[in-house]
Length: 319
Image 1: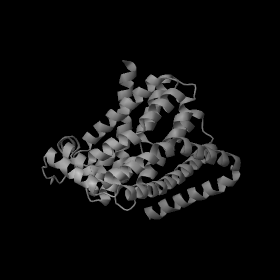
Image 2: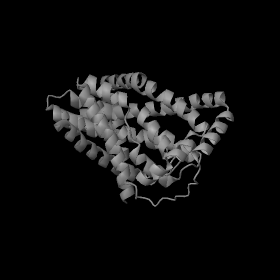
Image 3: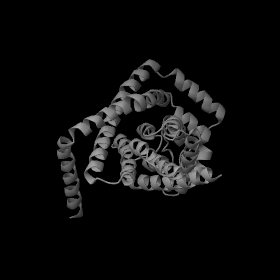
Image 4: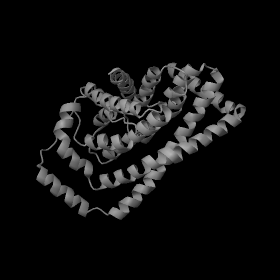
C-alpha cells in the first residue's frame, strides 16, 4: 500500500512538472541555457580530462599499486581496502560526481566489494577545489578567504565522516603484504603490458557517454528547481535553501546574493557544498545502477558531513 502511494505521488509530481513546462516556457528556456552554460564552462572542462586520465590509470592498475602503499593507513582509518586511496585522491582533485566513476571501475575490476564501495562513498565526496575557491569564494562572496574556509571544512568533514562510518560494515581484511620494491616492479610490468592508445580511445568514448548522462541530470534538476520555486512562490531565503538542496550551484548563487549576514551565507554555503544537492546524488547513483550500493547510508553520511563542515567552518570564521 505504501509503495503504491509513493508511486502515485511521484507520478503526480512528474505530471505537475510536465504541465508546468508549458506554463513557464520562457523560464524553462532560460534554465536550459543556464544548464548548457554550466556544463560547457564548469562541468566538462573539470571532469572530462580527469575521467580520461582515471581510465588510463585504472588500465595500468594504479589502484592496485596505491592500494599496496596505503593499505595500512586506509584500513586503520576507514576499515576499507587500500584501493580506496585511489578514489580518495582522484576525487579530491576532480570533484563530484567523479567518486562514483572511480568506485565503479574498482567494482568492475573486482578490486573492492559492495561493502567497501558503500563505505568509500561516505568519505570521498569532494567538490572541486578550484570551484570552491574561485567560483564560490572569489565570484560569489568576493572573498577568497571564505573559499579556503569552506574548502578546509569540506575536506576535514569528509575524513571525519569516513572515520565515523568505519565500523558500519565488518571488513574482510585479506590483503596480501607485498613489499614496496615488488609493488613498483609489478606496476612497471603493468605499464609495459598496457595498450595505452587503445585505452585512451576507450576512455574518451566512455567519458563522453558519462558526461552526456550528467548533463541530462543537471538539466532535469535545474528545471525541477525552477518550477518548484516558481509554483510555491516562497520568500527568497526559503527559495534559496530549497534550491541548494535540489541543485547545489543554483542554491549557492542564490543564497550569496541575498541581503543577509555574511556569516549566515558562509555557513549555509558550506552546508550546500558538503551535502552536494540531490542533483549530484542522482548523478552518482546513476553511475552505480549496476550495483546495489546503499543510498540511505550515503544520504546519512552527507547530512553528517554537511553538519560537521558547518561547525568546522564556524570555528575557522570565529578565529
